[in-house]
Amino acid sequence: MTRLDWQINIENMAGSVAAKYGNSVVASVFRRYDATCFEDLNPAYYSEVFGDLMQIDEDG
Image 1: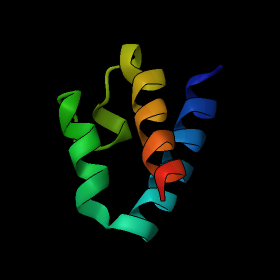
Image 2: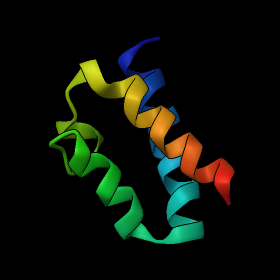
Image 3: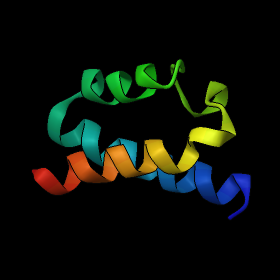
Image 4: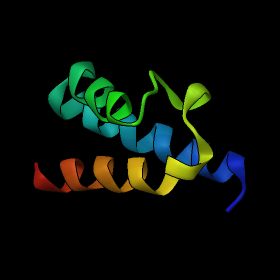
């Protein structure tokens, strides 16, 4: 996937999680990877962050 594809997917999933559980839950996922948002997330962690967010989203 391209960087833009990852950005769209992660930001959409983050929006869904934030709507269900609040911004603090999304922020906690990014913090696990030493980031505050997609822009400062290391590309090596794109799939992990997306997976974490998807898991949280599906649990609800």
